[in-house]
Amino acid sequence: MKILSCFLTLTGLLFLLSCASLKVKTVHNPEIDFGNYQTFDWITKPENPFEHLTNPVWYQLQLHKVMKTTVDETLVAMGYKPQTENPDFLVFTHRNLKEKVDVAAWGYDYFGDRYLDERVELRRYKQGTLFIDIIDAKTKKLIWRGWAVGAINDPEKAEDKVREAVWKILDEFPRSY
Image (cartoon, rainbow, N blue to C red; front, side):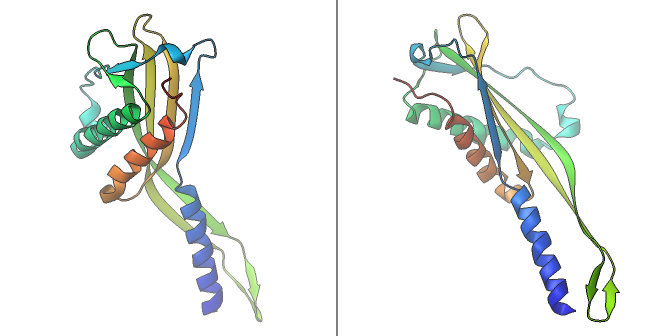
């Protein structure tokens, strides 16, 4: 009985861990020649007066700083230069945080001379989505978007998750020539 219980618990844990990885996607305008882009600047986010009701202040301030610094460092490492006057492209980031529930259930199982009841495990977590938009500074049109979706279970590891998400998203962005 203990072996089966340990097996089911381990299986559930592996299932939940497999759901925790970051999923990254990107889209871009195929007509754009990214070789024309060398410099960048930031678009400041318009204020949302209701954001404080859905996101804790810690996520708003601290994670935004980590994200902005990581984007800057990554773009510079890719060969792009920060420039506030007449940049080639603008960077805009936004994020979304949702409460989610994972359900893992196992049916009846025969063990020895009896059937075991169904086992159900619930796990609550926060699912974060981080978007990085690249906008042509002259035309003001979106030319590239990347986003990552992943679980944020531990606030102490949220900064590392944000860094990892930025790195994985920008890994798909074309390098500067």
